[in-house]
Length: 481
Image (cartoon, rainbow, N blue to C red; front, side, top):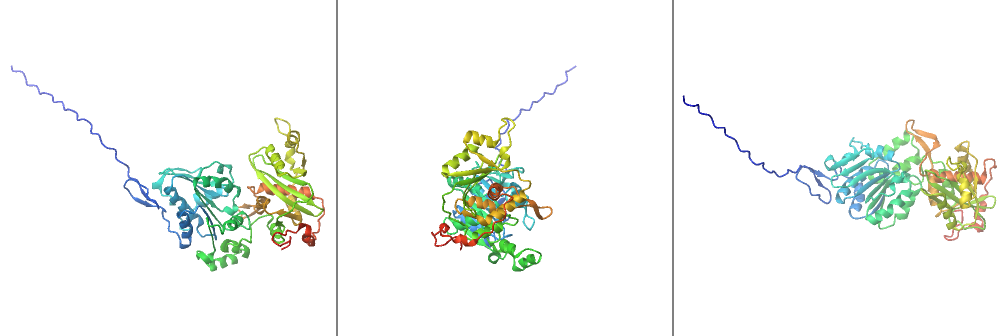
């Protein structure tokens, strides 16, 4: 029998794998003032979903044209933050770097712009379109962009502002911020050739007022004040309705017409500082032949603040100097006292200077005396803060302040305010603990040391303000205006 034919198996040869070129993912093309190269894809325009109103353009144009410092004192609801968020988004694509948006507190910044939105319901952070975002850190309120730039919202009440390296900064609600933060950041911006923009509505003649007045005629600064008469963003009828609903005329003048006169709502010493200003008691004070006394607020986690004054007879208290710092030991402050070269009298400290440390068994007052030769007069513990506040108000008519050396301390007093209760929309009967507390607490100890709680009220004879011994002749004016 013939053998059956067997089918030959055919083996298919495998083809060599074809090397394919990697396909680039399509992403958005970002077009700021300076175009950024990107693969083909949808076009995103920066600023995103924003057309500035005519009155907002001069500020934006000034920064675009190279101005490094700007102050925009604009009325309430004029779009300050919306304008500057878009400015930051644009600048972050023109130059890679860190861009920080400062608020008085981080919580304030989160509420206002991180979670905030405009009256159309458009979220402020959506001005950073998702196509240009690489990573978002919600906890730190930080956005990392695809070109490497970082945008972050921070509070100037925290020490974290020190040591950062920004090239662009916005100080929102600067009139409510700790003014020391600008002093920490300005040398960094100077080295980086970065920019800073201060946006706020007035809060009295505090550091916001001083910054504006100091630079209003400086050609290197852009300065601008816009009221509702300049913008028409809010009508006079709107303001009328607010007044009819209970807003005071003074507050309306501040919020809508950028008046510097009203001051910070809820401030404890607004009336007293206003009176001292009108009577010419914040000026240049000559030294007299009398010892210099000090009153301290000793900070452990907070700053340490010191007021310096001379008793000029039984009536006058010449407050000649102020010093504040943080993160330093007691030896630093003793060194500062020596550097100033005053002949010292008494040094007053709060009751906690006698609190003994668990490890050493020594108090701060013990260490100051034993190691540094500084003898503290320790004030008794306050049963309540209210009598101390009243002591400040009572002593204020007898105080004269050196305008230049006491400026930082006076700003603390101007910004020392009651705590706001968001739930009940009213002020609590206790102070807000913020950067202004240190100087205000030290001044309260000064008032207690100077007057005491049991001392009877002294009637101030205003005619003595014209005595030749105290008349400041540099500008042809005495103590009284």
